Image (cartoon, rainbow, N blue to C red):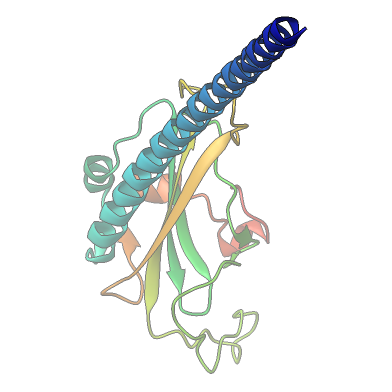
Length: 210
């Protein structure tokens, strides 16, 4: 009886160890799966972050260089903008009041960017206070009192080309914006860029072609 009881205890202990070993194996497998999934997600986020930083650097470079020009030429703009098939660049000259003097688009014409523009005015946040007189210039007494202007650059890129895992649901477009104060109240355009200007003239009425 004693021997039989002893062997039963050994068998029970062995069975318990087997079950515990199986449980540990399952937990280990789940842990490895979690770690792999986390690593893939972090890698995806890192890749998106690198691309966003690249776009922000490009937008900043365009804004800084364009803001220093008293007159922007088509040749000079083409030298600033490296427009590839999956990237759209929008450049605007915006007065302190928010009035958009001109808007130029570079890209494949897919209209990727969602712009903060309504009619002839920039509706986003500018880094300066509006002038005391920020009239829309509807009559002779309603004059825009802006004393400065800014270059606003939006750069947008499709995310379809990213080779990411299936763990992240990406937006269709990555969009970044950079605003830089100009050295001039208004930056002129050469004749070629005037033809590309997306902002309507006074004779065209309200509304933007963007």
